[in-house]
Image 1: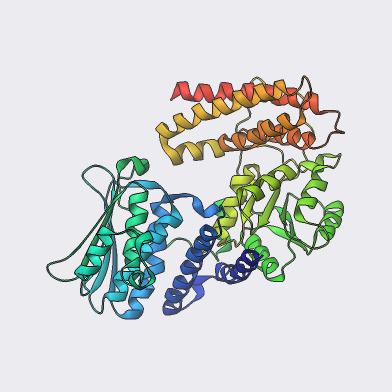
Image 2: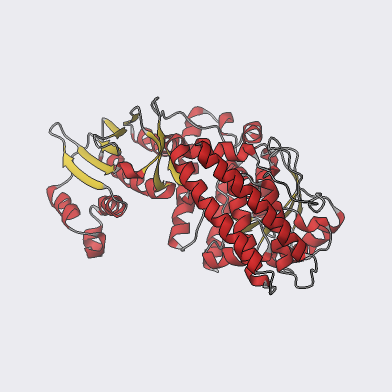
Length: 498
């Protein structure tokens, strides 16, 4: 309950920050705004870790996003103290690392916080380069007094678990950096520079590199401000959608609705589950976004009742909002029939837009033609060729590179064939639990590669598996199996072509 309230309060702060157009602020105010915004984002990720949740912020580290984030988060901190701040990135860096964004926020944050705190004049500098073995090196230097030898010895010889409160006051940030680095396969080193100041280096092996190396250097150019509605609209392709937003908290209503409007989405707001169903009955919506904890009728019950309908509107895309992101909560939400969930607090318009597109890719206005399930008729017959949303597939292939794409396709084929066999076995004798489990996997796997028709049919099968009275499940399962076969042929063809 406390976790729910903490996240709810933080949502108000983060949401308010996310909807401000920073470009309208004076330059000095903009720098302070960036400090607040990025510190809020870090706080949201740290709260999620502390409370044991899983979150959209656990995505892999992307240098094109991370470097501007670090620049915005710490430049104002240094300038407020009257010292210089520089970030230098070398050429041929990988696009990212197989480490989470929030983990690196913690690591770099401790390094820069210490450096800025102990530097009275001069410059704090962070460099990101490839080391001789091909992995990534992150180095922070400053012009402060250096690290006392006793602290340096303790950091290198002890672990955080060995420290009491008194010793933890000194050098705890360096202990955290060392532990984070070594627990993820890296190496940590510190020394005092002959000319004065500290020099701390962390290195991660080449096995942590993601994607192909970049030829150009990554720069600390600020990213597009979240408050720019047109930028968000162009990026996510969601403009023109009509959404039903069910959320009981007034602050969250305001934040979510402003973010949706910034994405070019119109929305109708309701304050509880009963009102949500009433509005759904009389309106036409491309998407339903529903908070799980609501009065009178919970979000889970709203999802279940929509999925239990007998008409085509039962397949409307539904995304859950929740402050509870543990695996057990995710499973309950999936079982109810949601396409997925976005954790609260929503830290930015970009996160909301990316979340919606990743969970329901066919919402994109520039996606390959695929009728939205809210108004689409039931599929008639199967096809020898899979219907693939090439916008989704090509974007994925470009992002992760040919080697990883080949490995992914191998796993996709395995999951598809296994799910197809489980669906077939679930028909004779009829086993709704097995069918539901297999179709749930297909929704995710189909969406990952842009198999739009397979994903739509798998969702219909999943909905039917939760309704024992649905007498049409057998033909739907057989149709789904045909779509699996087509998707397998597509995936194998792409692997062979690669």
